[in-house]
Length: 202
Image 1 (cartoon, rainbow, N blue to C red):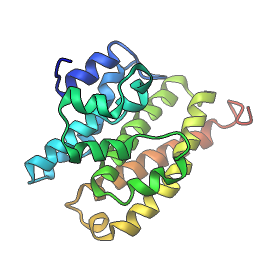
Image 2 (cartoon, helix red, strand yellow):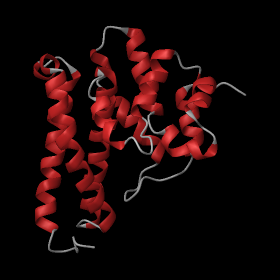
Image 3 (cartoon, rainbow, N blue to C red):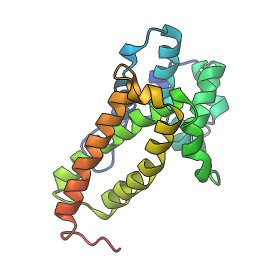
């Protein structure tokens, strides 16, 4: 089995697949997640590298597990260390364990940081989708409502588990939460604006 770095594997798997609802390649999304981790603020280079690798690979097991890219295979192909494997496992949704997914993430600072970055990137893409279409399609509405539900769990638990980091303007959490809340406020405004244009009961 040939070895690849995280970006090579991610780009090979996603290929020319497009993001739902917008004119954007799926392989661009993990790079957005890296950007919104604000890794430039980190002095620990090893930790920063772990964050980058896991941010790039965060969806791979969920999206390609059915094609054999299990956590074990990804670990071998990329050469992930134990810390990266643990983080990637925390970030991967597992059937039958949905209730513990977000609480588990919120107990781990690095996993929560990647999840927040992922949610910011997803919300920005959803905003673009809604603006491009001039309203919420049924799929866009379902995604928006899912984010509303999950953010109501994610943000309070994060603030409870890491109060000092959330309040520290130099910590990534502080900037991430500001960005996420700003994105959701804009989505809320658009949802109110367009709710009469599309059926919200289907």
